[in-house]
Each structure stands twice: as structure tokens, then as C-alpha cells.
Image (cartoon, rainbow, N blue to C red; front, side):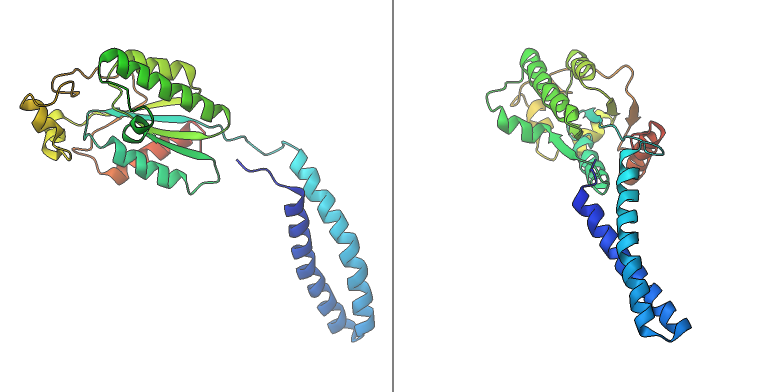
Length: 241
């Protein structure tokens, strides 16, 4: 979240006083018909009230009364390839980005470009997710909200991220395998069925479903916009937005 700087308070003070003083000057002139009196009153008023307004602004800036801190959080989308998690994460990021908060987007495809030597064995995948978890925790500790989308097929790595990241929200995109296969945007399922691709989650490598996710959706029978609305309602209920 943003902090009000002194220069902003000063700018607001000047803009407000210019508007108010012009109003005062005009009213005095209308009622007295004396322009010198209007200028004198307006001049005295603008100096005194600018000072009082500035002190009033800075005083309210220092008090916590009526002000609630918006905590950063990590939303973690998990699910099979082509389940719709990346699309939903992108939509959520765009909507959250309209708010006055620091925000970061992490995705499996982009992060793997940073760790090009990461393999696809269970141990390597777990290590990969753990690295993402550490990165997410650093961002959150610096008051940056994170929207992440990763297959993250194994429960131990997801639990690891949950344990090291405050305000972890796990969203399971429970789209049926046959629906994911029909989408097959990269032809991965077809290659896996033919034996040309090893270690594809859902075909020749297991996906361990979350036991107690915070939210569960299926893009097979729910509209993306409706899912995003549900997520926002959940965040409001938890007072994250």
C-alpha cells in the first residue's frame, strides 16, 4: 500500500485553498461590493487556512483511528495441465491490479525459464516448488501480494509453501482430466498417450489432489468470470481486499 508523502499533502492543501479562497473572495465581493475588502479577507484566509489544513492533514496521517492495514497474501492456483489455472490467475491479477496495492504474478512456464536445468522427477519438481515458495515469501514479507499458478502435483511441496508463506490461499482447479485433454493446447497429452512424453502429470505421473483447499472450482462447468467473482467474495470475507 502507499504512504502519503508531505509533498502530496502540500499539493492538496494548495489546490483546496485556491478553490476555497476564490469562493470566499467572490462571496465577500458580492455582499459588500468592495473589491479591496474581498482581497484583504481572501489573503488573510488563504494563509491561515492553508496552515491549519496542512496540520490537520498530517495529524490524521499519524493516527490509526478508522484505518485498517491491508495485508499481502499469496493465491496459489493448482491443477492439471490445461485445467484453466493460468487463465484464471491472469484474470485475477488484472482485477487485483486495479487496486492500490503492490502485486506480482508468478507462473510455471515463466519461472522454469529462470531454472532451466530443473527436471521433472518428483524430487526435482518438489525442489522447484520450494524455490517458488521461498521467492513468494520474500515478496510477501515486502508487502507484495502474489498470484501464482503452478501444477504443483505433490502435496508435500504445496504444504511446504503453505507453511512458509503467510496468508496462503490454495485454489484447486478441479477440471476433469478428459476436459483438460480435449483442450490439449500444446499437444502434451497426445504425446504422453503415445509414449513420446514422460512424466506428464495426469497421464504417466500422478497428481495428488489437495485434501483441504481454500477454494475449489472447475472450468468445465463454471464461467471464468463467475469464478473470479467468487474468489473476490472470499478475499473480501477474509478482509484481504
